[in-house]
Length: 130
Length: 161
Image (cartoon, rainbow over all chains, first blue to last red):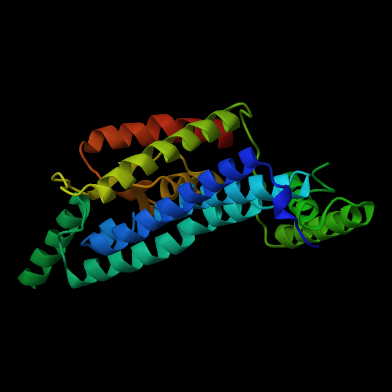
């Protein structure tokens, strides 16, 4: 099936491109943040720009342009957005918990929460006593 | 109804997805229903529980709240990342108690917290009913706990419990 992109009206082309640029721009900012931020726990927030509105913008852009080009609503692109949104937490949690586990077992106190710090001190004093 | 189709939500989602991907023809509809029924029985064999929704009206409400929050926090995080002279900012963990225990409700909360830039789900202890999340721009801990409890958890409790 060949799609005639010259059939896309100007308003749809502008609207679609705007969404595409928004999505791509947010993903770029996220990547930029990944380089710029210093610690792992801060860095984990940067790519979520790309997985939330970055993806949504690109999906909406391509839906508008393909709908206008084919003359019928193209909806299945929305599945990309749904699956990216639903699967992102799995990767993020795996990475995050692996790091948290390493920091806990190495005894790096800085990223730990209050309760954990108390727990750690408890364990340390017990270890010291025996 | 539940005896024939144990998982109505899964069935509807699978049929819709199949038809969106292959185009609507009677043949594909039959095929989609067969695949969805297969998935139903596979999931029942695994002993998974089908969600029962309490207040349906809370679903669109939650959807629009989350959509708005995602847009807002995208702008906030993009602003922080792009600022040339970054203001002093602390990021840190917060630990909060959760009333929500439904596994699917927790899964939805994980998707919400992860999809919103600036917050990341790290750990949940089912025995202590405690959630650990990391906040990128942590100003007031109490404010975040109240936000998650009132904005998301309250509606999720209405939907799932």
